[in-house]
Every structure is written in C-alpha cells, then in structure tokens.
Length: 291
Length: 273
Image (cartoon, rainbow over all chains, first blue to last red; front, side):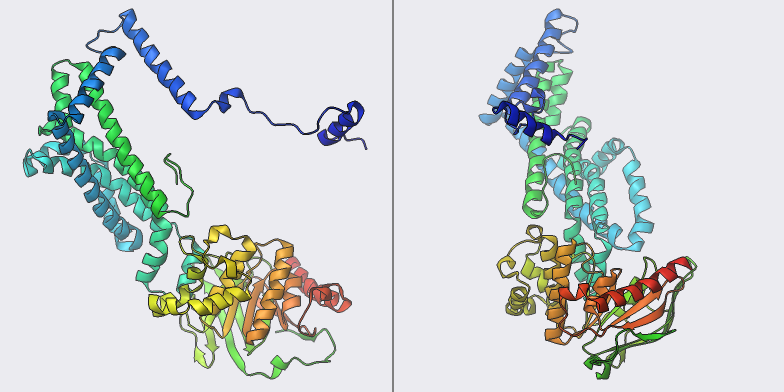
C-alpha cells in the first residue's frame, strides 16, 4: 500500500509504542468553547469598561454621555418608581397599551391583507402595488396627520404603531401562502379539496413559519411607532417621559428609560418566539430571526 | 404502437388479459403552445382491472404529463380519457395518487395524515370514524407503533409507507404512481416494491406506475410501455410473463435479464435518435 491514511498511521503508532491511543478528540478553539453566560458577561464588562473610560478621560461632556454609574443610579430610580407604582408605571402602562393594541391591529390587518395578496390574483396584481406604495412612504411623516385625525390620546399612537408593523406581516403571510410545494398542491387537487380547504388545511399551516417571521419584524416596529408618535403628539406615555428628560438635558434618565423600553420590546419579541414554538411545533426554531 | 413483443413464450397468459378494461385512453395528445412542446402524441392505452402497468422513459419524455392527464389534473389537448365508463373531467374519488415525495404534513400525526382524504371529502367526523380503518392500514404497512407520531420521526421509507396508507384509505379502484420510491435507497426501494406488489395483489388494484428504473418496471409489471420523447409516444409494449408473486430472486434469472435488455435497447435507441 503506497497511501497511508491517518487511521493506518494511528494503528501503526499504537502497535509500536503500545501506549498511544488511536482515539483522539477533535478540539475547537478555546474561544469558541467559552460558556455563553461567561461570554455575555465578558462583553458586558468590556462595553461598560470602555464607556467608563471615555467618560473618565473627559473627552465627552456628561450631558452628552453620562457615566455608567450615573446611568445605573437612574436605572435604580426608574425601577423603584415602576415597582412602587409611581407616575412612571402609569406612563409605561399607557405605552404598553398602545403597543398591544397596535400589534393586535397590525396582526389582524396584516393577516387579512396578506391572505388577499397571497391567495388571489386580484390581490397580488392590483392590491400589492398600493400596499408597497404605502410602505415606502415615510411613515413618521404621518404622525401629525394621525394626531389631527385621532387626537392626542392613545388612538393616534396606536395608528402609527399599526401602520409601521402591518407591512412585514402582510409580506410574511403572503410569502407563506406561496411556500407550499407543487406536490402538496397536486395532492390536494387530486383529493378534490376546495379552495377554502386547500387554504385552511394546507397553505396556511405551511406558511406559518413565514407568518411568524413577519410577526417578529412587526413586533420590533410596533414599539418604534408608539414612541415616535408620543414624541410628536404628546400624551402621557414613556415617550413623553423621554422627551421631558431629554429637554432637561437629563441624559442619564433618557438612557435608563430607553433600557426599560428595550426590555419591554424584548418581552414582546420573546412572546412571539414562544408562540411560534407553540404553534409551529414541528419546526426547530431559535430566537434569531430565521425561517 | 409499432410492435408488440412477447419476450417470453406464453406459458401462463396473464389473467389480467381477460379482465374488463377499466382505463381507456384514446388518441390522447398534449401540446404546450407557449413552450412549443409536443408532450404527448396520440397515446392509446387500455388498462385492465387488476393489472399492473408501467411506463418507462427518459426524463422529459412526457410520462409525468401523461399521468397528470390520467389523474384529471390537466386536460388533454386532444383525445379522450375514460375511467370505469365515465370520462375523466377533473380529479376523481376513485383515483389514488402517489408522488416521489411522501408529502406528509408535519403538523398532523401519521394517522391524521392517513385520514386526510376522508377529512377533505366527508369532513372531520367521518375522518374520526375512519381512524380504525386507518389503523388497520398502518398495521399492514408495519407502522402501528407510529400512528400517533409526527412525520419528522419517520424515515424516508416509513414516510412513503404512510403515504401508501393515505392513498388506500379512500379505497380507490385505480392507483397512479409517479416514481413513488425513487428518492429511497436501493435496499429500501426493493423492499417497498415487494410491499407494493403484496398490497396490490391483495386488493386486486389496477396500477399505473411511472418510473425510470427498468428493473423496477419489470419486477412489478404485467406490461411495460417504453416511451420516447418529443413527441412523447409509446414505441414498445413489453409483456412481462413472470409468474406472480414476483420475488427479488427473479432479478438474477436469464428471463428477467432478457426483458431488461430488450427495454434498455429501446430506450437507448430513443436517446440516440
């Protein structure tokens, strides 16, 4: 034999020395074997450390960038206010209501329009161009209009949140309806299934992963919509708190409020991921945006 | 049809030869004007009750188109398709179909997949009532233990067996099979072919199989139709007079080899033309 494979070599070594094992463990880089919790903590420490360094050197004014300690104090303050049922809790509640109603409306609208676009030639050819036109409009510019139409209450915020979150859900639903393969369609045709049966028993379940991808993208946009509308249209939500703190150059407060908002945003996202695991149980999914 | 060859001397003229014709295709042609393709050219075909026939040909010779026309999934451009004395105008209850992929739905358990045809035709209550019958079919296919499992727990061969059960649950009189086992490995495929034969013999089912495997066509069929492409037509009809039930041992016999050679010769001629 002219060619010596690694296995042959291993056997040879083992035979001659009598001690060397031919079983070897493939080792990845140590960097890739760091436990997730340790890695996340390391990134956190590194980030905060850099932040502190920038503040300590005095390159940046504390009005522009407060120190981590100051921010932590504000996080504590805001957290305390929230937990003791202070005025911030009332604000958070208002914002969460806007986000909730906005998301529910976006799901209903997005799903309905998505089915029309994905299932009918009419929807795909005639309706979709209009929907795309609506989506490409700068949505924030509609905020003053929504306020003029719906007033300074939560309705105008819900409207903008819905507007921003609807389109990804339309696209997700419609894409899902196109996801069924040729064989599944032929099977349903040979079984004599009606259009409604084909939609409900085959196309919609097949498209669920796409629908949830749309939901995930929408869930991120819905918070942005509510807060933007609060900036522009008053009200008593969290956006208003941020606006006031910002006007007073209380940057550490702004930071801490944003962090609490991001927590709420993450909760919504996790709820969608949980729902996906529950309803699309046959698909292995992760928290990352993937199909 | 140019020639009719009985490759093996008549020793036991197949009983199917005398059975009543159940599927009759007369001068069926199919043209796709947009792509300027003449997919089928004056196909004449008679399937008798309880017979097993195969059509074999290179990719793109129109055999899948033929199957779709027979199933009522596509209209022919010309000619007529009669099944059990009635013209095929759209899909029918008495036709069972199977494809290369098992096409089980992952959100339904195996048994829910099997009763799907009943659920679509007669509703959920009827589907529940059919569970006993479905369990019986799954038992026959060796899948009793997997009735409540989800399809992603099944191997490829098991999934195809579940698909067979689904096809049989509505008791079709004719089975149209489009390369049903070509995605499986060869050992599983041989096994599945023998299973298919057993099931068909038990039920006296009329079967039409599309395949590109010559040994598969020969081991299963009473008649093998060799198809040539552009335009798709039958160039040869080979009667396989091997006794039933067929066994895998027959593959090594000279008779089997002669039949395979004859079919291969015609296929190669078609390719070279």
